[in-house]
Length: 325
Image: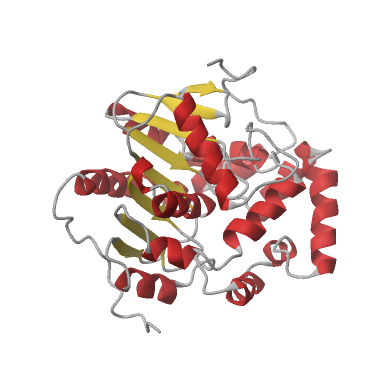
């Protein structure tokens, strides 16, 4: 298995304001992770030895979303951190970005690394959904799941309603209408495809809280990989079933200020599942792994210990105050 050409430390483009990063608390907290990049069905960052633990990033992310803080997990694990299909340095096929294709590419990458024992799968947002899909459809490859900020919806109408309540730029790229979809496609092709430096600079205006390396990585996709993944994985009505029918134990972690999530639905889902539990974090937003990496690490390590014990201890957060329906 060869290393990816050009892998190593990333030098940020000069077009992104250093001042923006200096005043960003998340930019100060995040630093470049370690590990060796390897090519295969997916580009993966690998570090450590031991039982496998996989970290999956969200939409428009890359393996670097999980910064240096999460390298701590490699002390007792083989840490596998991919760029999911169509993003970062991973292949971008002309079509095929449903959960089956994303999950199949991840399993092929684990096979390529000769990882056959069940893995603890940790995901954020899109990565959380892919982890849940794997737990539902390939439980023999999954020892447990920690899902940070899983965007699970009752149906496509509910998903689109949730997107309509987000910020204007998020609504524009939410595939809500033929007009907005066409504008988003043109912007993606002209900026991310042809002028990624300018796209990263514009992203920094929208998300000045994010580290500039992650802003640059947010441009590394195609319109097809973005739009198909959003439509077929996130804006669907299967996530609820994946939670309820997952075989391995699942821990959902959600911030009470995360506008992408339906907290009532998550609470109802865990009540209807024999294997899922929920923790609600007061005041947390969507980017929990960047906002609170140490707390995320503690949860991951605790869940890793929990899934190895029997019976599974209750770690559920307070959902009694939610109006479940």
